[in-house]
Image 1 (cartoon, one colour):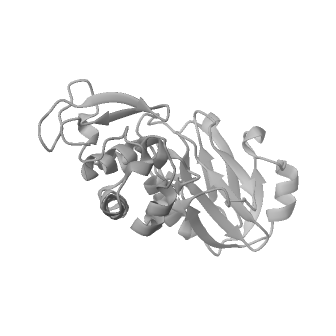
Image 2: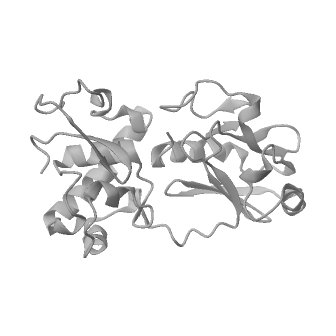
Length: 258
């Protein structure tokens, strides 16, 4: 499933469309567009030039000379540029790229396309997206910022990390990996973190993002292969515990995560 790492991979791949001119907009799935229809969006974007790409949390933004596009990929959305998928397969999704799963495309002058392919239709496209409700991007998290964010927050740490209004970009796999490496229980109240724990959690978050991006994605963590009923903690060999926090399946080691 695309988390901050996969969206960053999409963004980097999309840099190849910078400088291209938009020749048309195709809304294969009209409901994928929010607050604008395909005809209106086509009038806005046709003839414009892609000027930059950026990312905030799990949202990829394509900047053009006419407007900004916010691309959200949900749980199963993949980016396809010039008929080549940025990522061959997402964890827990199909290996196929069926044409009927194409939801939105930009066509470019001289050929080439940017397409969002999404089997479950959980993503969307917005124009000039308002990202003010998103929290600090996970890659920019610091101990001091985190210490402020957890004050008065009684929800579980796992739920806190998944709250995009607090920390933007972290999904289920990354949250489990980060908390496991920090030896923090996913069920602890966020406000219970000490100053030193906040600094360690922030530092580990950035380190995990750097490391797993180099490995190839959110499913390359040390804990990932043990996320099953027979799973053992890679650190101490103890049986992993399965819980639910924030509505998401959580795997953790009760022997060393406190």
